[in-house]
Each structure stands twice: as structure tokens, then as C-alpha cells.
Length: 640
Image 1 (cartoon, rainbow, N blue to C red):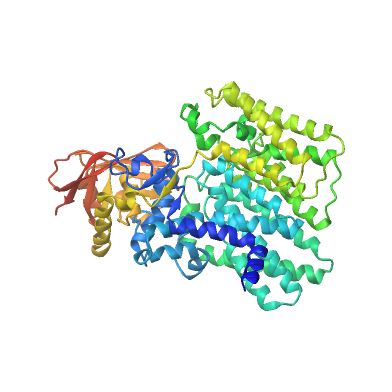
Image 2: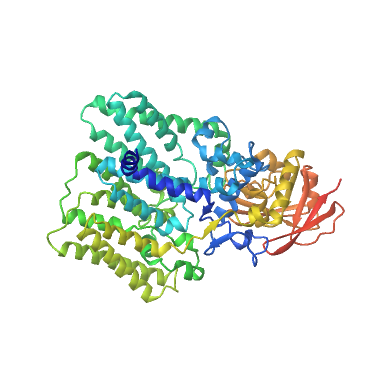
């Protein structure tokens, strides 16, 4: 019996290993979320919980929005978060609004069990699920297409550890993980259908469609770049794997129908919120085109090992915007292709071609000025060129590893030496570009070290292909660059353990029961209220506005240009003078300078406000104080 279990575990290690790690992380409530940032602490000098490393304050989209929404869903339980001015953000937050999204966003549905399962476990479950799917789906996908697991594991590690993955709180992984797992399950299901093993095939195809339906959700500019190539690569493989048109249709058509059906039903269920998004002034009306960016932004990933130390000194940008992925591997692949004949089969080649073609397209999108032509290209015109600089390297990584599955050790030493030297040169050139532009604090020795390590890793992978140690060296080199970027957080810190958070959990429950609202003049208090399920007039409009509700605040609609925006933080700046003034200090920020009395007159459901300073108005009655972000905040009740 023991022997049988051992054989089963060995044969299924691709599933057992990642699953075991995943379960351990859930049990201990471990994440790399930045919700432990000082701003989301009751007292930053005495943080609650246990954390290794510092949270990145730059990741406000994560800790102020995504993580806060997930925590809020746990607090609400079986029901919806109340965001009175905005349409429900479930489509982008991956939270359910009905039966279809309840299935597609199963992890979001499980957050509703917050009344019976510890919140830290549920949060870790959702946080790590895309990573689990990445480390299962991508190696299995590689094995199906090439017969190799090793290169799939290397691709997964390089995707996970890339600077633009770590600095973007794993957003690329959220897309690639679900897409890779969906494509791998789709290939499995297609094989079963061709073999006439219909029950297994149908179940697998339905499951693949559910996973692939996650494609249009989350953050679209990155999803379009990193998701489309893997889907097309899978279609190309299935088209050339089978020789008869009957088998090809059986393999491709059910998978396409399943993916389209689940995606269509998901979009239909969320149509109201999506319409609000498409109708926004920003980014709904935005159309992008290809533009030229510096070589540092495009190929600079190998120079970002010290970005967590010097990023604060970046010029005219921030660490997230600078962060890129290993685009240099696209150049390495091109040179390797010229140097040695590729002996892969037609099906594997059909998988590689879309990856390379789209990788080259997106490289051109951020290195060439496309002008008005670019704005007319569907999907591409939804991707700002600077987002391509962040994400091309993920395509390059997968394409390079796919190509390397058939690479043979070259007879001439000159081949890996020349290619590795070019990679090192490109790394150094990109580093010099970053020094002159965005990162003047990037030291010469850091640029030199990045070039040397890049050249050495590329040489090792080309000269000793498929060796565990050379792949491990590549993974360790990537890990050394970014391992200190993310914190290791046990539990949920002050968002659950602090007196203030517990106080607001009670406030939120009372407000939902009575149909009343809160509002604040501090974005970090807004995050606290979102995370505790406290209905508030100040929050983040992740998708689009509920126009009727905004017109209650702005009856004439003359400020629609200010509030009809997606991905927008909106808060109040309390004043004693009557009226409300709307201003946009940034494209995604709205500040409403207002009297609480005026707001309460227009929206009578407003029952309490939080203020960073004391107020003396006839409509307000002091209702207590609390500490958040290390500062005292005042609570006022609105009187009739």
C-alpha cells in the first residue's frame, strides 16, 4: 500500500508539490500582500501581526482596492459589498454577482465563508491560487506540447520572479496562471474527446472554459499582452497535432465553444457594470497607440536587483512603472534560432510561432511610433505602450523556454559565447539608459553586475541545456533580484487584529443593517472601511459610476467629467462652507471639497463621517475618535 502511494505521488509530483505548499500557506495565512503597509496600521510604530520585510507603499491599487475588496467580502459574508456611487466592481475584483460569476470566480465565492473560516486562510487561498495554477498549469502545458516539464518549471519561476510581477503584486501571474491551467486542461480534454472518452473529455473542456473565462477580467492591458499568445499557441498546437480535420474539429471546436460560452455568460451577467466602464471618460474613451520608449524601460529588467533600495529616487516615475520582465530572452531566442536548426515537430512549432509573433508585435508597440494607425487596431489600442514595456518579457520567457526544449548543446563554443555576450551588452546598455533617465542612483557596479550575471546565465542555459543546475542558476539569479521586494505577511495585520478594525467591523454591520452610509477625508480610512464592509461615500470606483447616484451629489451633472472615471479614488476634503467642489488632481483621483451638511442634504442616508481634523457645524454631533495610520481621527454623527 505504501509503495503504491509512493508511486502515485512520484507520478503526480507536478500536482502534489505545489498543492502541498499551497495548503501550508493557507493554514498559516501567509501572503506577500502589502496590506501591512504603515498607512493601514492603527499605530505604525507598533504593528500587529508578524511580517518579514517591508510592504511596498507604491502598491496602493493592491492594498487600497483589491485586497480591501476581498477582505470586505469576507466581512459581509453572503451578500454584496455596498458601494453606493459606483457599479459593483465584481468583474475586475473577481467577486460573484450571480450564478455564472459564482462558478467562474469560485475563489471569490469562497470568500463569503468568512463567517465560518478564518479570514487569513481565505485571503491566502485567493492570494496564492493564481500562483498554484501557474506552477501546475505551465509545466503541464509544456509537457503536453514538448514532452518537457523542466523548461515549464523554469518558465513558471521566471514569470513569477520577474520584476514586473513582483512590483505589480502578481497581476501578470493572475492572468497567466488561469490561462496556462485552462489551456493545459483544454489540451487534456481535447485528447480525451478524440479518443472517444467523452465523460472525461466533456468535464475537462467545461473546466477549461471556466478557467479561460477569467481572461477578460482583472487588469486588461496586461491580460491582453500575456494571455492572448498562450491561447493562440494552444490553438496552433491542437490544429497541427491532429492530422485529420475530424480530429482537429473535435479538439478545437468544443474548447472554443466552452471558453466563449462561459466568457459570454460572464460578460452578460456583468453587462451593466461593463457598460458603465466603457462609458467612462477615462479610461473608457482612451485609445492608445504604439510609441517609442527608452531601451532602459524595454530591456532594463536585469538591472533592477536593487530597485527596492534606490527606487524612491526614481525621476518622473515610480518603481512599478519602471519594472519590466525578461524581454532580453526574445533577442536570445532570435540569435539561437539563427545559430542552430530547430528540430521540433510541426505542432510544437505551431505553438511557438504565435508566441514569437506577438512578442515581436508588442516589442514594436513600445519601440516604434505607430501614430494614428495604432489607434485603429482592435485590442492593441486598449494597451498603452508603456504597459507593453512591463509585460513583453513574460511572452519572451515562455517562448524562449519552449524553444529551448529542443536545443542541443552546440559543437562550437562561439555560439553560446556570442549570444551570451550580446545579452550582457544589451543588459548593460539598458542599465546605462536607466542611469541617464529614470534611475540616476543606479550605480555602475550594479549595471556591470547585472550584465555579467545575465551573460553567465544565458551561457549556462545554452551550453548546458536542460541541466538542473543551469536552470537552478537562472532561477536563483531571478530570485536574488526580487526576493526582497515583497513582504512575507502572516495573517492580516491591523486590518483585522487592531481595535480600530474591530470597531469598524461593528460599524459596518450596523450600517448595512440600517441602510446608512459613512464618508471620510482620508484614502487609508476609505481602505479600512472597504476592508471591513462599511458602506461609504468615499472609496474607489474601480469600474464605472452609478450615474443616478452621482447625480444626487452633482444634481446638474456639470461635473460629470470629474466623476465619470474608472479606477478612480474619490474622497472628501471637509470644509465648513456650504456646497461641493469637484477637482481631479490626477486622472484617477477625485477630491470633493464639501461641507458634510451639504452632502447629507443631498444624500440623507449619510449617517456618520470621519475627519482628520475637528469640525464645528450645526449638522454634526461628536461621536468619538479612533486611531489610524498613527493619527487621531474624529467621528461625527449627522443630525436632522
